[in-house]
Length: 400
Image (cartoon, rainbow, N blue to C red; front, side):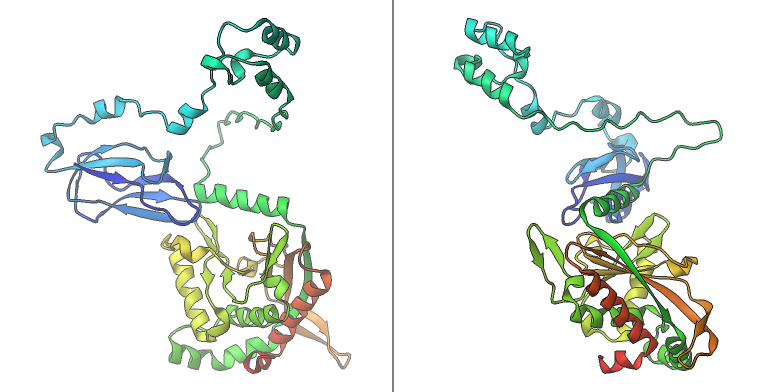
């Protein structure tokens, strides 16, 4: 009998949700054949069959949570009919209680209390069963009661309201683990960072002309299309080098300055927003940046990204313009201290240096930042440097 267990899920990830079983009980399976999909707060991954045979039991249903190492099911040799094990009986057997749960069980206080101890318990309206006794045979002592009575009151937490009933024209669908994690991280960013957003706008004329002039030759030579994102990644790296606080993070009472540039690029998927990280952007050509972004974006939509590919970024860029967003205030990707928001390119009237008015392809830029570590001057300067580089892309070539 071969056991199907939850594999190691990656750094800091200890729990997953069973998304779906790709096989049902009684089905024949081949060794290393995908048999069940697990969903973590970062990625969806497949668990392969550890051996060939028949799936004789499924221990965890879709939608249930599992820990690393937990039993998902079992594979037996031959057909399910020949297997002597009864899945129903196995499922009926209750799982042993976790050790942590046993250790946390309250210790019952002895029935007999010393008169002085009984008086202290009664005077303070205490439940002796809730007090851990340190005396002989677990008896309560006066010190136990004093320690219990003087302990700080537990923190009061707001009990969430019971789920309301679903109406006849409504459908209740459980949030995916990824969506739950997104909600948790976004709220965490709002609760922990002193978040502020500053705006600017950039004339995209020069970049659009450069892109139109060389896009065919670029694609022919490098096998990838020349997009706008590589220009913004390169511009962001140059700005981060001059303003290191935007590339840093807060750790306790310290600031960690990062002398590398791993930029996260937000990608929308059917399961939710994920942020794959392009490593060492300062050492890569624009062609390689475009290839990395394209490859990660495709694999993100297919749920094929590894957890290590979505952790450890130093700064994030998100482009709401692909969905038509004209302006927004992006939320920090904690523990990072800055995120750049790109938006829709729109023709707008602009007063030119000579006083004339012309229609120009303009984009609003937004930088959300943690004001605890980044001052307003640094945030504004960062956006100005992005603007200057995009409006004069030769600066990117000359590293200015």
